[in-house]
Image (cartoon, rainbow, N blue to C red; front, side):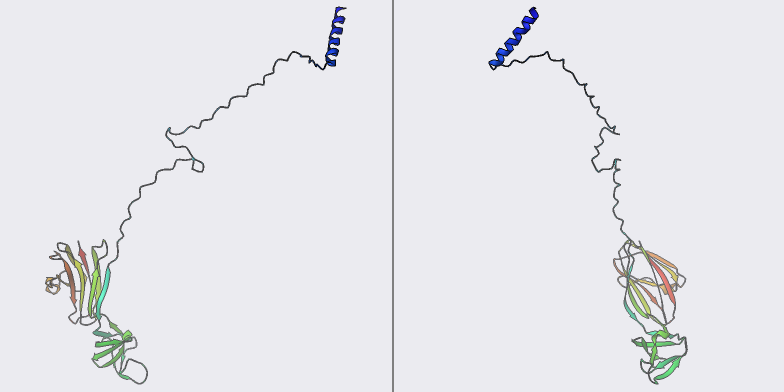
Length: 257
């Protein structure tokens, strides 16, 4: 009975409040909060290094350590070949060597017309006065012109300048004589240097000091094969060979220390 009365009173109160513009909310007890399970804390992954002082690897760099560069060696000076310059070459003699022997001697340096004035057999020595366009003008044993490519010839009078290359201490020189003549080879050396002459073919040469005095005379000892000595002065030294009207091949070596 009392419950019915209480309910009626509450209903009436709500009605009166609604009529007066007052709204009441029935507040129900709040449910206990529901907690979501905690997310696991990520564990930091540490990459081991080979050394505590190793530099960090940047993007784009190789993963392996780069070995240090090998020390660069200074360039080694390359040896240079000797420089040989013929300063004078004069042909004064030639020897007949014609595949169609005998060799025609002509009145002019040409093959046109009937200009043959004589002929010479192979092996004949000729005195040469001059050269022109491949022709030799001869005066002995007859006067006229002969084709130079049908003869043996070379520098009868020759002067050659020899310059040792960088790092070079020796040089081999060789040539030949056709008949008479003299060959000179000149090079620069310093006082106190040791010079050696070694003959490998032909007669032993003569060596002259810068003042023109001979240090060794080749014709004094035909059996000599080598000479060595300390140079007395700085300047141009000359090696000389004389044919003495004998055609021959020669070869020798010059060493300077």
